[in-house]
Image (cartoon, rainbow, N blue to C red; front, side, top):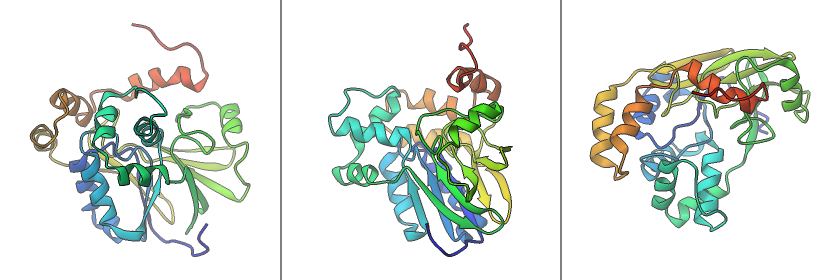
Length: 259
């Protein structure tokens, strides 16, 4: 953990290889001015993985990287440690990564902690501090948060996580929990979602030209179903209620809905 308290940190999660959405967020003045940009995983699993990696690397050392489950799955696939990936665009993206890209993603940490003005020690992770696929939601029950926080140091009073593609801020056992939502694959509301930290928490959404972005992805990406994929995810056609219903069973609250 760095000993220097940061005044402004921009958090970008779940970019999923959507270059136009990432470009829109990086063009935001407050992102450009932030002391650090923290990426909380699932960076490349989508239509433009190498282009997204290149643009983020161009930002230099102020970008701090965390691996997500999709990044890990692509590394495992490329290394022959698994024979498939559940998400077809991630399989497409994995094939496009260079050997150096794979090694870069393989070396990323699963979490990091930074001191941020007004928030103290902030722990950043992809899904939860202990698991890159675990589900916690805005309405997760208190005993669920007790499990998730079991090994988190008491000095950490803010936890920032992604994974579920829906932004929220809530208190859980005296800790502030922040999910910035998804830059590239939002659920519930279109736009590129992100968060600005310090001294408080400010959930943001960057509006950009979605029809133009879809046309660009269709023109530049060889994924066979890119038009349908881009229309569905960039327009956020999955509602927040549908996403909460689908994720709810994995939060341990009962069987998944049918129909």
